[in-house]
Length: 231
Length: 231
DNA sequence: TTGACTTTGATAGTAATACTATCATATATT
DNA sequence: AATATATGATAGTATTACTATCAAAGTCAA
Image 1 (cartoon, each protein chain N blue to C red):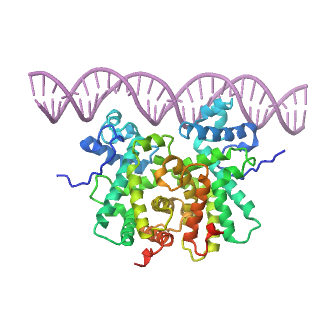
Image 2 (cartoon, chains in turn green, brown, red, yellow; image 1 turned 30 degrees about the vertical axis):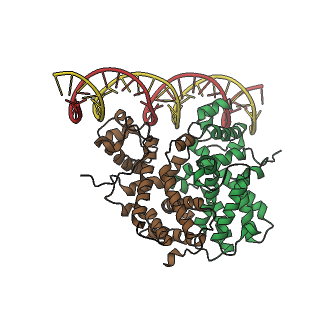
């Protein structure tokens, strides 16, 4: 019986749907672990094959190269994020409260989504924090964008932008603000561990709470009528 | 007679200072052209050697690998940026006016710095827009950070952060805001050409002006007493 | 049960990449 | 004139990112 949530992912990203076989599921779940441990550069299909007792050739039947695996994982991550935010804000009317929940989800997705996914969301979040930029900064960006590889990310940003718009219709740049907010959550979590002098967030237990409060603070200043931190 | 500005760059980044020989200068100026044209992945020392009528081995005497070239170029870029902002704000007292100039420089550095550099600043800016994240998202981040490879970038962010602090001492996250503003200039220029649905900026002649105004708008909302766009 | 089709495994091979090493030559320095 | 330094020329190695081929195993349908 299937209890996991399977996000719908653009089928041009893969050659064969990894969710339709045991090998496929192993490929993606073990990719997450290995990329998190080795880093994306040192990760490759030969090592992955060895790890899951399969072969390089078999994995190439699912994904044409390791970049596609990364694109697949990021689509998964953003789809999952979107879904979680949707579920958690369904019953809520006030866009300020919705935004507060969206921010919290953005930061805390790994703890909230445990046991809903084949994938280790903690590892996946670290991967996204480290690697997401590699996905969207490529010479192949136009072709990949036209193929719809980034739809999941764009959809999430759009729905944040609509929230901003609902809260403060006079705000001129909701889409830019949305990407900035998402990147702020990525960056500050990353910098806090790796380049601490670039952020006010202090590493440690309450780190995620700090990032959450910070993003609330920025939203409160950017949008009128939006004092999230006081609610 | 030397009329160019030579930014001081952490000497651990290179094996032999490229500014101290003709070959070295050719290496960096041709790297900029080639990375801009080919993309960083397809650029390598063999191709570079062929282009400048030298050899792979000779280039390896200057840089231990192509990543170091990218780090070198980004240090150059941020040093140059810092220097330009400093020169242009030297005589000015009002931190708001200083900030306005800093924002403009951030966006318009290629046109402002023509003929001050060996390097084509237009190409270099495109490279930074596309590749900067690759530099700071690496498994070697801690070692490289400890070696001081990112000092130029950090210094620039710090000086922006002090400006924010001068303008509005009550603002809680000046450093995060500084990195966000710098990244906003990088991202929106990139997205405008490559992922247009992620930004409100419209590609075209006035593109840089739009980005400038947008950043001013964000600063105006984030900091109290800071209506830059009205000045 | 036979036969066909699909999935995976096993193995081999190729072109390109990212270096490293060595030696010769040219040039500059003392 | 002797020496040190910079560069060029060439060769070689390990790894990577694929591609191709064939065999074995399991599945499904007549």
